Length: 182
Image (cartoon, rainbow, N blue to C red; front, side):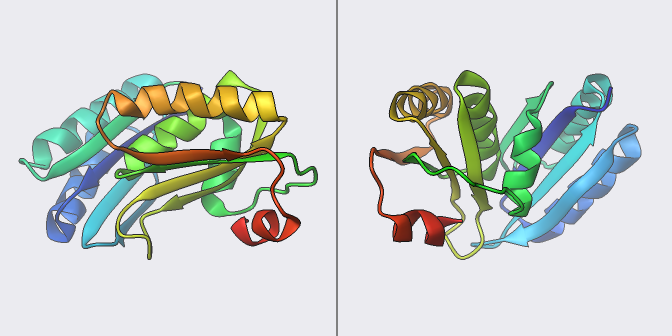
């Protein structure tokens, strides 16, 4: 089953292209996307079975030659992560509003996956570094207790990496905040 993803984030755009090439040539993976991001970083996200994704990321780390900022391998990614990254989440019910902000794109993907697996929350959006200083931001919604629990667990995961910037839970957000956050 092809439900694993791997992400490698680099400080160099040129090296990023080399790493993307090495990753896709080293294993049977599909590049979901690779792109430049702010401020002059590069990110690659691949998809495939866990063995192929692990091998691909390992090759990426070697090819990165010291310019790897962060990386993550998630063996059973929650399907909502893909729609949140692509901005196609359909949020019909608004509850509490939660935000997790990280210094790393790989970490925010990991945080989003952990949050949606931990509690009954909806991932609203995942922003990956563009026009936000290279940071990653995930927004989510649900009942207050579910959002608090999801944020707490996800933040513990990224705190271990030292890349958590901040987080918040707004129990009763204004409609304008929720609508403009999507």
